[in-house]
Length: 240
Image 1 (tube, rainbow, N blue to C red):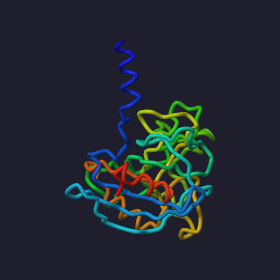
Image 2 (image 1 turned 180 degrees about the vertical axis):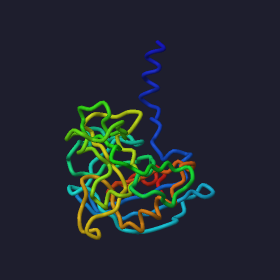
Image 3 (image 1 turned 90 degrees about the vertical axis):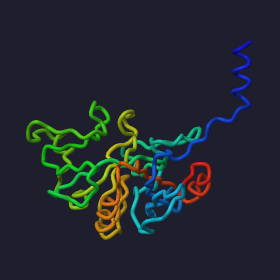
């Protein structure tokens, strides 16, 4: 009897809807024209007195060469949704926490609580789905020697990757092998003329401003969606 009653209640009571975390008071939004667009419009917001207030934007950025696809983050996935996979050249869509920063510079302008690591040749970010370190930062106790180690090096002769901030797609504590790795905000290529493999890129000046603005104590999140999806979920998800 009790089991039957429980099932009946479950059928008629609404399931709690997703919304941005209540303790998140900083939000970066990215909206693309559609799922196949590699161009994004970015804005930054802070919640003041319970209301989202724009603090910066809009400014332009670039996304994956093939557009967007649902990623693994804080948001629920639509039933039957296609999800990002390693090497699909798509940026992960959804709601994601924003992590620490990495770069080649000795110092950067940032909030005191934002972790920053000046990378060396021993810093790796693992994109190999077969590795137990997949989508994790790994520090070697020796100089890179194998092709695998050298391929995963964060310090490359590649200026667009000289400064970056982590977008927590498919991240700790739950990482799915092969569901996409190494998703960051970083400097765009060719003055914004080139798309990415899945990251969100922008001009260096805007990236530095964004990193300096992020306050980990405000539980910042990144919302990346096609325009129609954003408008359709704005009220329910309590988006800016």
